[in-house]
Image (cartoon, rainbow, N blue to C red; front, side, top):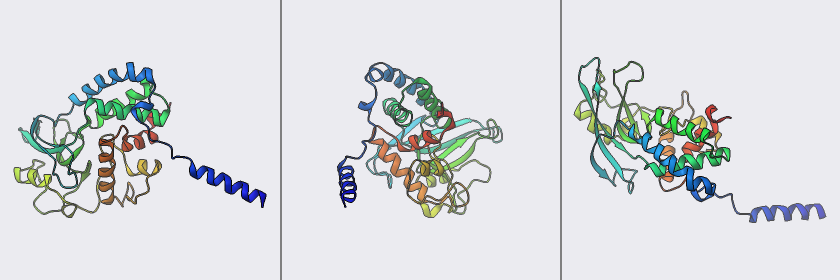
Length: 265
């Protein structure tokens, strides 16, 4: 009986303990906040300079469906001269890109939460990966042209909620990889009814995938990285990025960092 009462008392005590607070900027070492962080902000400015889709801003919208209240920017951009079409391809995309300060804060709190360190080894790892993977361009909706497989052959990838999706609507996929103005406008107002059941694997801005999400404690049924890449992943990525927008931490970035072999030192 005494043992039972002792255990019950311990459980009650633990229940009264506050949950571990999420990392904030003020949790970072004071010396880093004073000296290291300003340098990281300058480096994040360079990351954002690589945002090739941020060429001509046409509008800032606060009423994009499911993104109401967020300053989503409509950008028009052109690729380089395409080797097969011999023209520059026009793109339209809604972006929600962090400021250099916000990006630097996310990177620093991720390093602190994952490694309990703000050593430049970890900061540079995440910064450089984001520069390479997305230049911090979070595509809310629209087309992202990339020449991933053939240099200067710019292929269109349609995005929704920071993830590649595959258009199901007839006539809205360019056979020649050169989107018409009608298709570009269509991608901006894309709904889940317009896309195929499976989505892409990776979420911007640092290629977080479903396995990373689960490994970091994610509980929503977002399917897997193979045959069941369901639409729930879009909803979860949207929710987590929106939470990050008003926070010092980015759970998508943290999930990637916890699973990344580049962060194991």
